[in-house]
Amino acid sequence: MDQSVEILRDFRQIPESDIPPRILADARGLAIIRVLKIGFGVSGKGGQGVVVARTAHGWSAPSFIGLGGAGWGLQVGAQVSDFIFVLNNDPAVRAFSRDGNVKIGADISAAAGPVGRDLQGAITPTAAVYTYSRSKGLFAGISLEGAIIGTQKTANARYYGRVVSARSILAGRVAPTGGAQRLLGILGRY
Image (cartoon, rainbow, N blue to C red; front, side, top):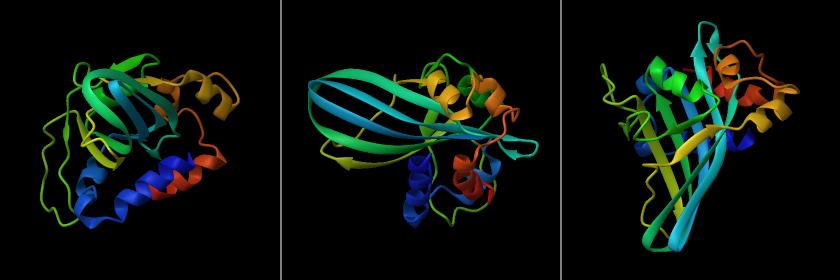
């Protein structure tokens, strides 16, 4: 949970890569995840994070998610990337609400989101999900096309002290615990 707060704060500190407030105000949900990619000919990427949804009463409690994927080719290096996925519509939130997997680019459309705090006016989303990323490491870039994101049922059960579905969490039927308050406090501004 602390990692998600750190990622959200880091994005806010760089004006030229900041997510426009209008995009966040219109968001139906957010997924925040840190991904590690390592490669030497064959590459693998994996990460963990949370997803939250906007409900009639504010933001839902967080549901834990994980990401995995593989690739091949002339790849050498390691990279850590932080991602924020802005879920622009209810079908995107429903895709993350399933206790199964979501494949970026296949199950839901994704596009790089507009940036900059000074972006004004109405913004019509061009994809179900806008992606924002920041990277550190030796890879020139990282693509999540084809990556699989899934609910971490065990992490949710451990965090909430009982088995609970992502659908129940994101629908606002599960009360957030104390650890989520910092994240929800930041999101409450939007």
